[in-house]
Length: 162
Image (tube, rainbow, N blue to C red):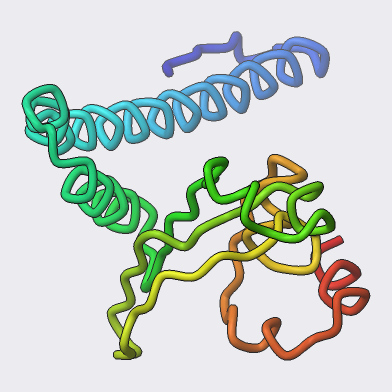
């Protein structure tokens, strides 16, 4: 921005000119941030296009879910991730208490830093687990160290997330 003022400009004019300059600086910074975010979003869309093409063409749901989990972790920079699926067909074989709370089945898990044997399991949909809390409240949970929270009681866990 270029501004010229008369040699004997009054205080009000100088203040107005300086305020306009700062407003222009702020606009330029916001424009840069928006352009940066737009470039990141465009790059992510370009990166996900092959996944969408495979999505349309695949009939292997397991491979597709693994691919979705992998891409979600890549986009978010997550070290690990899991997919939990509602297994409604299991409900009749389970206890009435569990059935009343809905059922989650851990279907896929990925972890870059900890290797462990994966076994699918079923758990009730309640707020005393990370997955249950997130699903029931519709909230994303981003923990720097999920293992630190895994040893807490349900009350401690819920208060830590608030």
